[in-house]
Length: 565
Image 1 (tube, one colour):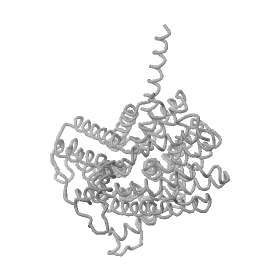
Image 2 (tube, one colour):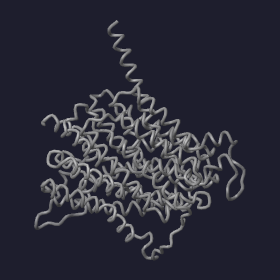
Image 3 (cartoon, one colour):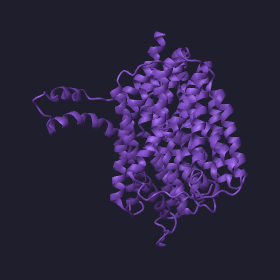
Image 4 (cartoon, helix red, strand yellow):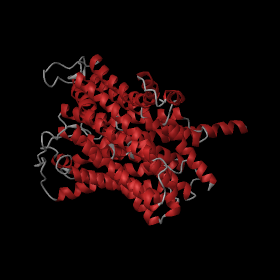
C-alpha cells in the first residue's frame, strides 16, 4: 500500500508542482503585512499579498493566449495587409478570457481537484465495484457540462448553412440539448469503461482496436447518407472539445487512484488511457444521435423560444449558466466524499473559495469568448482567403498567386496549431509527469515538440479539407488507419501516452479559436460547414508521438548493440 501511495503521489505531485506555484515571497509578505488590531492594511500591503499570487496564475494564461492573438493579428497585418475590426472590443474580450481562465483554473485546482484525488484512492476500498462505475459515469457527464469550451460549439454553429446542412444546424440550434447530452453520455461511458480497464488490467491496445473501427464504421455509414455527412466533422470535433481543463485532471486523478488502489500501478504510465476513451466515445454517441434524428425526417433549424432582451448575453445569464454547469459537479463530488466515503472536508473555507472562483471564472470567460477569441478567429477565417482568391466584399484581386496563397494559408494553420499546443498548460503538466515517471527516458521537451508538430500538421490538413472540399471521412480513415498500424508495433505504455496526448492538446483557448477559424474559413470559401480541424488536430499527435517513440526505441537498440560490440 505504501508503494501505491508513493506512485500515486508522484503523479499528482507533478501536476501540483506545475500548477500550484505559490511564491515564497508571497507567504513572507503575508506574514509581514498581517494587520494587528490597531493597524490597517495599506495599499502596498495588498500589493505585496496579491501580486506574487496572481502573477503566476495570470501569467500562465497570458502565455497561452497572447502569442496566439499576436500571431493572428500579425498574420493579417503583414500577409493580408488588414487589421482586426472593432479592435477595442476584441482586446477587452481577450482580457476577459485570460482573467476568466485564471479564476476558473484556480477554482478547479482548489475546489474540485482535492475531491477527485481523495475519491480516486479511497473509493475502491470503501465502495463496491458497481458504485465505483456509477460514480465514474456520473463524474464524466458532470465534468463535460462544466467544460468552458462546450459553449464554443453553439457559437461556431451560427455560421452553418441551414439549407445545405440542416441536420447539423438543428444539432447546434433547437436540438443542442441532444448534442450536449450525447457528449456527456459518451464521456460518462468512457470513464466507466476506463475504470473497468484499471480494475481488470485490460490493455488499452485492445480497446482501441475495438472502439476506433466502430467509430470509423459509423463515420463511413454517415458519409453515405445525405445530411448525415455534414455531421461527421462536428462528431469528431466533439471528442476534442470534451477533454479540457475540467475533465482531464479530474478523470486522470480518479483513474490513477483506482489503478494504484487496485494494484495495477506497476507501470508508471498505466493510469493513462481514460482520456483516450473520453475522446472517442463522444464520437459514437453524437453520430448515434444524429442517425436517430435523421430517421425522424425534417427538423427545425431555428428555435421558437424567445429569450428576454435583459437576459441574453448579460452577466446574469452567464452566471446562471456557470451555476448550471459547475454546481452539479460540485454536488456530486461532495455527496460521494461526505456521505459515501465518510471523509470530512479538512478546509471548508478553501473549498468554498474554489467553487466561487470557478463560477466567477466561467462567467467572465463566457462573456469574453464571443467578443474575443471567436470574433478574432472568424475575422481571420474571413480574411485568409484573400491571399489566394478575390476579396469577398470589395472584389479586389488576390494578394498572391493561388499556389503561394494556399501555401501561406496552410503554413499559417500549422503555426497556429503548433503555438497553441506549446502554450497549453495541460500538456506542460503532462510532460513533467511523463519525464518524472519514466525516469527521464521520454523528455518533456521531446514530448511537447512531438505533440505540437502533430497538432500543427493536423491543423494544416484540416484547413486543406475546407479549402479543397476534401471528404473528411477519407482523411479520418487514412489517418486513423496509420495510427492503428503504429499502435500495433508500439509498447503499451507508449500507446497510452500517445493516445492520451491527443486529448490534452485541445484546451479552452485552442478549441474556440480553431473552431472559429474553421467556420469563418468555410463561410468565406462557400463551404456548408467548417468543422473537422479539431478532429485532425487530435489524430496528428497520436501519429507523431508514436513515431518519435519508435524512433527512440530503435536508437536505444542500436546503442545497446554498439556497446556489446
